[in-house]
Length: 172
Image 1 (cartoon, rainbow, N blue to C red):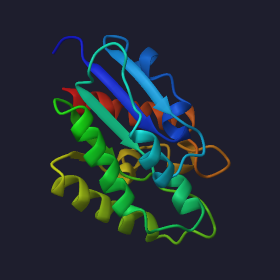
Image 2 (image 1 turned 30 degrees about the vertical axis):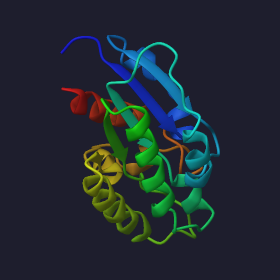
Image 3 (image 1 turned 90 degrees about the vertical axis):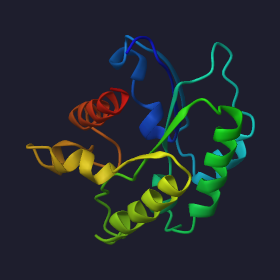
């Protein structure tokens, strides 16, 4: 497939991983920002500039901080992010990454799957690819506990390995 230009954009789940090291045969730009919400990325997406070359792929992972703060009404802002990125980078394939399972007492068991259904419908309606965040970890033989840090949100090394393998699969 050759060298691909890949942009990762979103929250700390993007920021805290060395995507360039994992995808060393590609050119990677990591625009993850810890603590960012969908609405904050919506504002920031207006000013996104890539100085080297246009991305072939854009992987978006955002919404976790909204859920942590009991904000479940972020889909319209997410649609605006996609519209902005499609306008800025019309040749890129956009991949919406669904939310990962969260082990937080105040987040109901069905919240993430329901939001992922909405994200899937939104992504497909916007002609984007969708990567189901829950399915990424459903295949772990070590269980969800080994995929996440003690905070119940951030990924362990094993969790990042599973996600990175799913990203690599999407690139082929």
